[in-house]
Image 1 (cartoon, rainbow, N blue to C red):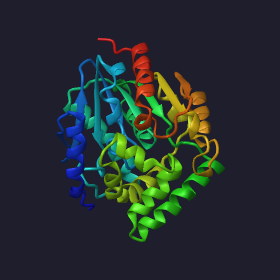
Image 2: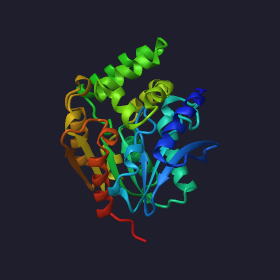
Image 3: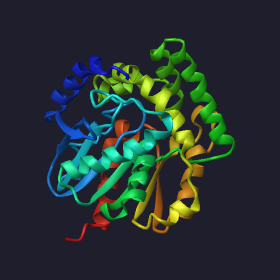
Length: 298
């Protein structure tokens, strides 16, 4: 079982700078840590790989006033529960955790906003508990197939070889410098204090569990047809050529919009895969506007 306690001090720094209390929720026999701000309809954010506090920059955005916005650290990340399971169980556990957190917080129905692998988890939640998901905002989920996907996962494999050799910092840098941008560390340092060290601490979760878990996830039209709630695919214009996998996220957008019964998309100029970290002022209004068009009926 991975020991994640060293990341605790880093998260306390982030929580203090955000001005939000860091809370614990007993979940599935262990616990998750979370932060929340505001009142109103719930917006549950689900982070992607490596950066457990990736949604922290949008919590205090004025556009989201009037909503109860929750961000949490998934099991295996930061100081939430460590994991002792097989890779093929990873996504199911992540979806179960999200549902259990909603139960703990007394949230019957929520708007889900997921980034990257977190968007896949959001879809898993919606497949399992569709009546509890009012809408989906999907920030570049990795669901494409074909040559672009093969190129991307080959890059992840090369980055993972550093982790296997004992250099997790080099593995994280190799992965994120191409998935996001070469200067990703400066971005994280400015927007999510402690994120670089935290990502290194959590490299085992990503390379040993999340990546193989995602490779087991099969998306098809049958699953898509079950997701009838409003869905928005958000694409960054600068995400088109990550890791040499040209069009990977563009293909994902086309696939989802064509298959989901009630989906639309938006492409945001100048944004890359770090959208909720590097561009919170532009992203938050998109989330608020979509949720506002699809309010929860009481």
